[in-house]
Length: 453
Image (cartoon, rainbow, N blue to C red; front, side):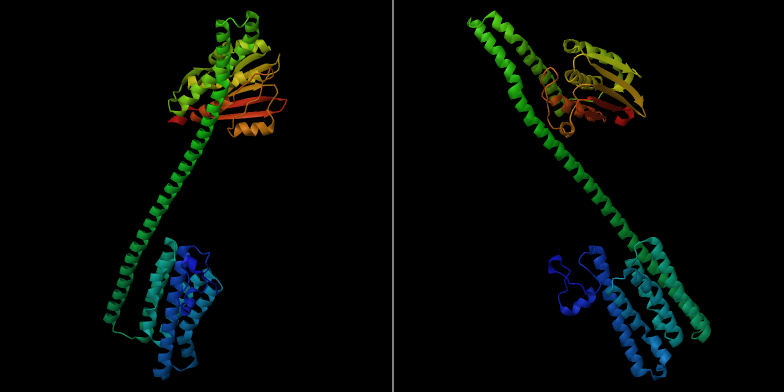
């Protein structure tokens, strides 16, 4: 017999109660544990009633002291003991089948051989048990019909064989019996179905709560990411914007005080120019990021001429491409796509700028696009220095990562994070594929407008 701990509230208070816990274990679900406990209580109560009935026959009915009749009258006690044994060895399925099929038949046999109609009324509690212990409409209906038919059939046969009652009495008895079964079944069905309805409602509420919890967890994760980004942004601002402004201030201050020569200024200007360009790109990305965080970036889907859009980006990045002798080529199967024009321009400008940055002099950057299966995919690929698997994993985890370009161009790592967030805001996907020293391809998938409906 299993041991029970008081911590879980399932331990019997008194030693004699342990018999009611036979076959029950601590790892059972609360509902099944309660069902098993109630079943044991009912079974042991039935055992005591069976013993009382058999003792009465031994003391007061000597005409039934034949071996066959004694065995038949002792059958309920045997069956109750067998069910306790099934519970002890945890044969729960056998216990259920034994209870709802073998046991009712035994009472029919007892009533037929002993002329004890009272034994038949033991069947009625099993109708009630079927509603409590069985958990499907089909099983309840099968048990209810089977037990009811056994009861009615046994009454009919008993009256046919033994002629125990007058015809009208028999008819009235049958009407009463059928009425009791029908009334009880309607009541029990109503109660059981109300319980099922309540359980379904609880299940739906639990699923809704779990869904809400998952949404809260996702929001908490996004908030945590935003806080990390914010901290990194302020770190970038304090360093990358401060440096060129400080350089400008020193030049102006020195020039005002006539402490700097024209030659020195000419030497400083190229470096200062690079710093200012970096600061300008960072400032633009920060503005885009800030707009996105304060929900000012709304999705407006229009028909965009992606070929013309890339042409404007080529003009914007022409000087950077010319300095590195990198050729940006566009090849679109479909020119007109449904997209948010401003978001698409921000994303493509960042991605194409990165491709130029990490290309070797004399190489090409390929921008292509085509429609497929309800979405539109734009690919920006280069054959530059590529990204190692370790660094690519950091980028895909939305971590800030920046590395110098082939001409030692500097960056902040903020651009890719903004691009990914903007594309995801449009219900699209932003995927980077790369291998070290073999180049990089960025795949931008934008959904059909129906995805926003």
